[in-house]
Every structure is written in structure tokens, then in C-alpha cells.
Amino acid sequence: MQVLLVVSGLFYVAVMPVLFISWLEFFRHDQDDLTKKEQRISGLVIAIACLFWVIVLPFAYLELLDKFKRSSRAARLYQKMLTVPKIQSLTPPEDFPCSNFSNN
Image 1 (cartoon, rainbow, N blue to C red):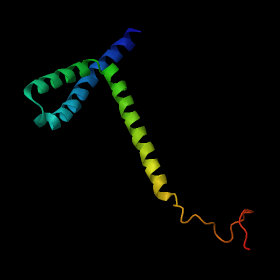
Image 2 (image 1 turned 180 degrees about the horizontal axis):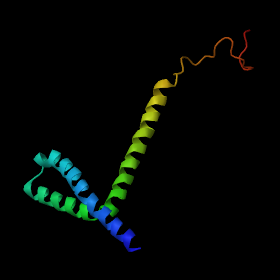
Image 3 (image 1 turned 90 degrees about the horizontal axis):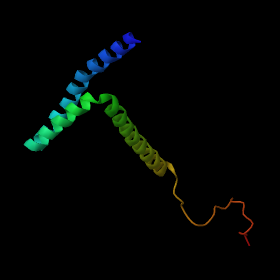
Image 4 (image 1 turned 180 degrees about the vertical axis):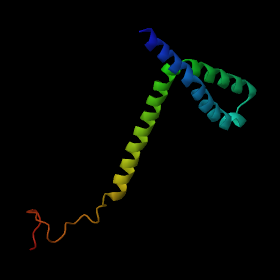
């Protein structure tokens, strides 16, 4: 039991720097658009997120998954709109079997 606790603790500590470095890279891309106060707050948020990555990471993944599903649905809708043929005219073709129309 203690070995499992130590291994999970080491995994937790080993993942923190990896997440911090990757999230810091994202932060540096947007750093030019932020004020000094926003930069400090963002750094604090990154530090807190790295400490609680076990909680933060699944929620971030769920948010990304939701965005992907929404964009996927929209892409399928646009694809359907492009492939569905438009009605050419209101009159049925000559060989259309319908009892309401007569050739008299």
C-alpha cells in the first residue's frame, strides 16, 4: 500500500514540471497582449493549476472535447448543406407517378 502511495506521489510530482513548462509556453505566446498585472495573475493561475493538475486537467480536457464535438457537428451540418440538392422547380417531372396530375 505504501509503495503505491509513493509511486503515485512521484508521478504527481513528475508531471507538474511538464505541465508547467507547456502551459508557460502558451502563456508566453499571449504575453505581449497582457498588462503587468494580468501577467502576474496569469503566472499565479499557472502555478495553482500545476499544483492541482489532477483536478484541472480533466476539466480542461472535457472543455476541449465539448468544443471539438460542437465544431464537428457544425462541420457535418455544413457538409450536408453543400451536398443536398436544391429543388429545381415546383412542377414535378413528366415521369413522376402522381394521381393529382393528369396529362389531359
